[in-house]
Image 1: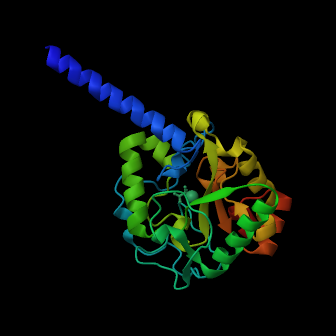
Image 2: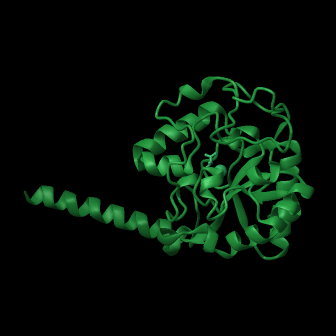
Image 3: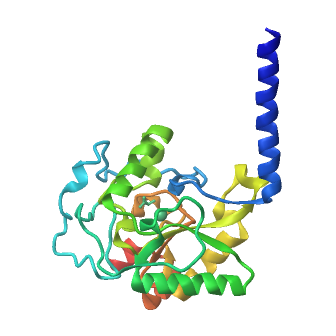
Length: 257
Ligand code: DAL
Ligand code: ZN
């Protein structure tokens, strides 16, 4: 009994000192949730729009519904109605030279060439304004998206997953033109983290278009995009389209109509 109690005290002591050491090691952590798509605030969860969603992630293995779409076009649209083939992979993926958060796969550190260079300029522009961004997740293969989707289903349930995470084949991360962006945040603030409310999130919203990116899933546009507000998810569309989309407050779906 006494021995067991001593062991318990030892274990608690080890945990507490480990935590103190970790905290002292740095007063900042990088916001990171491998499945970042789900860390934003939950307001405005999309109602069922009637779009195709599924628990069976293998269902999305067929080629895109609009087979005539040019998937290499930087204005390609990928959503719950416009799918990519399971084996679609851009042929010009390159590693993006920006700061990444921890535990990012090599695959997720890549984007299509034009998007990668634009993102590097965006990060440099942010830095000049005193804003330190970190990249979280770029290109994701069908397989990677499947892992994220299934994992999120288990941990957060169906409603949440459908609001924030694309079924494999429906994610524009697979185009190599999207990146999730985060910020370095104080450890003690990590519980209430809402990227859209941080100075980094605000900067991104106001400046992304100057580098050819749009916030792909804006607030109050859930019925059109099919996803809840994602202040962290930016999509490369090129300078002209990005500026026009920003000026008009349209979604990519509306802009391309
Ligand atoms: N969060 C977006 C919708 C994705 O999973 O591609
Ligand atoms: Zn994303």
